[in-house]
Amino acid sequence: MKDKYIRLKAMLLAGTITLTSASLAGCSNNNNNNNSTGSNQEIVSEVTTTYFGIGEHIISVPISPNNDIRFSNVQYDYYPGYEPVGISITAHGREDNDFGGGAIIYSNVQEVECSSNLVDKNGNYLYLDFGTPTYTDEEEYGSNNNIKEFDVGQHIISVPISQDNRFDQFQYEYHDGYEIVGIATSAHGMYDNDFGGGVLLYKNITPVKCTRVDNGYTSFGTPLEIEKTKTLK
Image 1 (cartoon, helix red, strand yellow):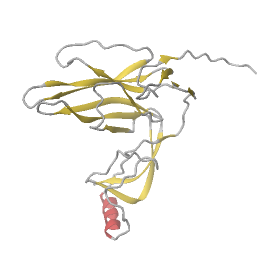
Image 2 (image 1 turned 90 degrees about the vertical axis):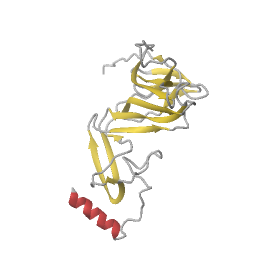
Image 3 (image 1 turned 135 degrees about the vertical axis):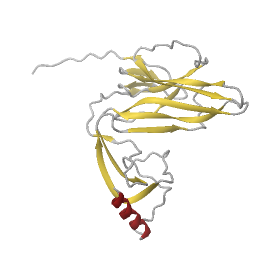
Image 4 (image 1 turned 120 degrees about the vertical axis):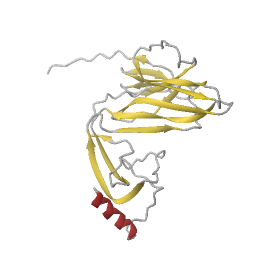
């Protein structure tokens, strides 16, 4: 692996590569604009493709500090072949409770194919974008005006935690058709350990029907009753 990295560095010095470390290529051509290369990452001209089995491709998506999620429900993007497995948030401020951003971590629940021309300082390829499922058996659901149906794992929302849950046990509300996949709590203050708010992250575990509001499909949906009949030929 060390020899491979030396060869890649030689290509860079020879002028074969003109891209800078401010560019990024990930699992597919549809790169996520939130991603950016760090000081220990380089882009090379040679692209490699690999396959990840279930649970082998784990990546995080940042939550912008400009998008404070602690005080209202928020809907998140669904990525085919992946499901969220956790969430983190931060807060800061000597007196103010300013949102510091966070991240959602995803893991692939289907085999995915990823391509990349991004390597780390040791010459190892990095796959920072979502891959493409090699096979999918998701149901096709429709939408009508402000009503939309979501298949399993496609409806992902966070719900604020209003009480300080860091020192006592709490019970959280159950929602039919959903399960909690993450919890995050923040704190702030220069000297005091003040509660900064928190969120619960939910995903649907059965197909649901949701109604759109101003900020998207941020309310819990109603589970669909699906009846499948078999026709004998």
